[in-house]
Amino acid sequence: MTIMERALELVPDGCRIGLGSGHAAEAFVTALGERVRSGGLKVQGVPTSENTAHLAGKLGIPLLTLAQAGTLDLTVDGADEVDPHLDLIKGWGRAMVREKIVAASSRKLIILVGEEKIVPKLGTRGMLPVEVIPFGMALCERRLGELGCRPVACVRDGKLFVTDNGNHIFDCHLGPIADAPRLESDIRAIPGVVGTGLFLGMADTVLVGHDTEFHLVEERQRKR
Image (cartoon, rainbow, N blue to C red; front, side):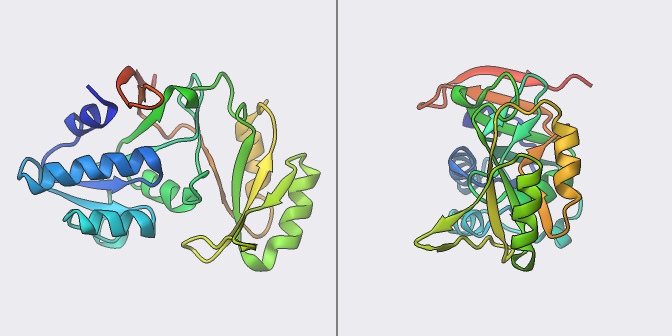
């Protein structure tokens, strides 16, 4: 069984579901689309990025805006790091603010990752994305540097990367984070910061798959 197949088992018929972004999430959306087209599931999806919206629409998954959907039954998404407490770093795919909003609107958050994303402490893989408004770039860069975050602006094709929200991203290069809640609070206190890739206390279930084949290796549940 793959982590996609297991995730589909956790999707109730007739639900409103948040559709994540990134490699694992897109593989799940593709599997979900096949199930919807075959008549095996009826769902309404809320995408976390324009790319996901395009993919889901192409696959025939009915879509809602978050305002239309209200509270979602669950969200299925990927992550870039998962620690032993099921806290996450997300955002290497550049969509973490919308992902966090959709996840916070959901009763459950199911995360799909390869084994390489499992870390002993958040920050182990060395990068935390932070989204900032364009007007605040200079201040945010300076304040993030003062926090020891070593920010580097995300650039694509020689230009500052622009998120679906019209903002920019600093990739903060750091090591294992000693106090993730404190760091989240300190970064969010900087005027101009829209959000960070720290998802603390949000994931309910993490499905861990083989690095390349997504074959289900382990299922972890948050201890409440």
